Amino acid sequence: MSIVIKEVSSFKDILKMIDDTIASLKQQLAENLKKLEDARVRAEQVKKLRETFKNLLGEEVLVSGKEIDLKDAKILINPDPLTELKAIEEAIEKINTTILALQNLRKSLEPWTTVEVPSRITVVVKEGIPVTILLKL
Image 1 (cartoon, one colour):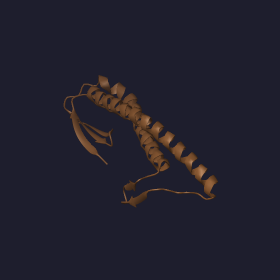
Image 2 (image 1 turned 90 degrees about the vertical axis):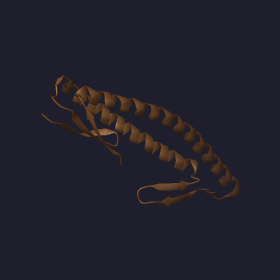
Image 3 (image 1 turned 60 degrees about the vertical axis):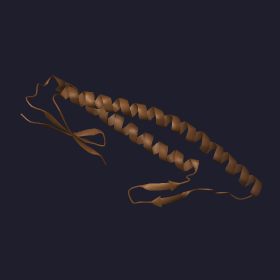
Image 4 (image 1 turned 180 degrees about the vertical axis):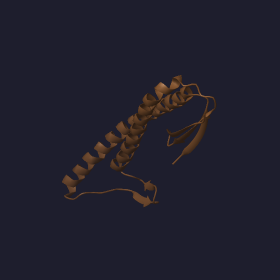
């Protein structure tokens, strides 16, 4: 979990920060969608190959990697394409959820851009999303 505390001079600066984060996430999303497509192709190839082996040998041939559980994370050693596909799909879902949250927050903050603030605004950003805005009068 990443938490950052930033100071800005206006609500417009917060919107710019949100816009920059959304742009970066959309770029990551595009890159990951390409990886997802590649992983889907590999997963489909492996699935067909396994079916062929099953038909030829009469039994399933399972070749999967090793998973090491570190409580809050996993290490996948030589993962099969289906496992890799699932991991990429989960990452894409997280990116999409973050983009939607930022877009909703941006929409909620737009009316605040007309507010003139006498001092700096402190913004607590958790996982890339502003979660607390401290406005001192």
